[in-house]
Image (tube, rainbow, N blue to C red; front, side):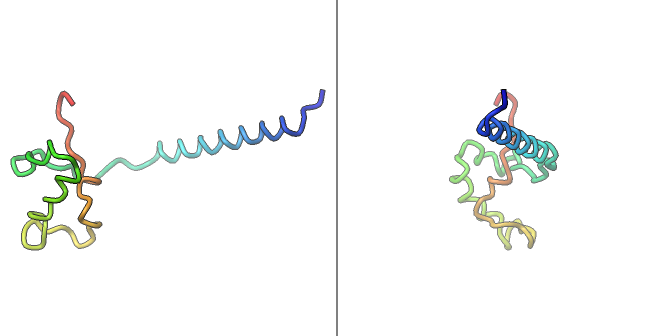
Length: 93
């Protein structure tokens, strides 16, 4: 019995899907490790840990500005600090 054209098409689509999934998996597997500095868990930053990200980000520029703690010139946009600088994980969380 000869396979029908739709069965061949289905097999081809399945093979292409599996190849694409494998490519995506390999791409993500080989991604570089995260290197961005995390939000310090010190006295200055402790009050921001219980806050929601967006609420805490509103206060970052009070200290992190040209007159205070200056950011590097090539620093990306400053309004989403905790998108990159994630909170440190504490034991029990």
